[in-house]
Length: 56
Image (cartoon, rainbow, N blue to C red; front, side, top):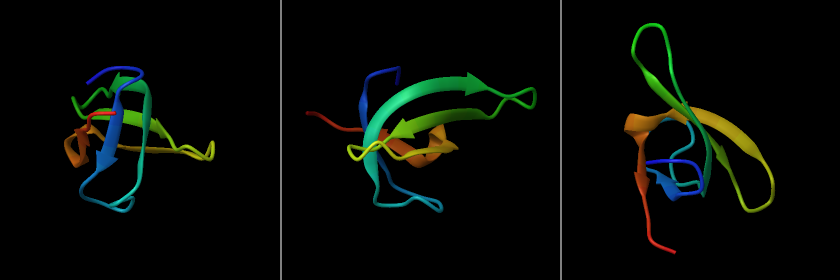
């Protein structure tokens, strides 16, 4: 998973939302977080483990 990949959130607070990965970071504790930008421009952060990459 990297910047520009299309993704769908499959678990957590933002379940069901889709968008494009904009930023991938690893926290000091080792958790990988990503920023997702939806088609309408809304941005949110979520854990990478809650997201899967989708085609197109």
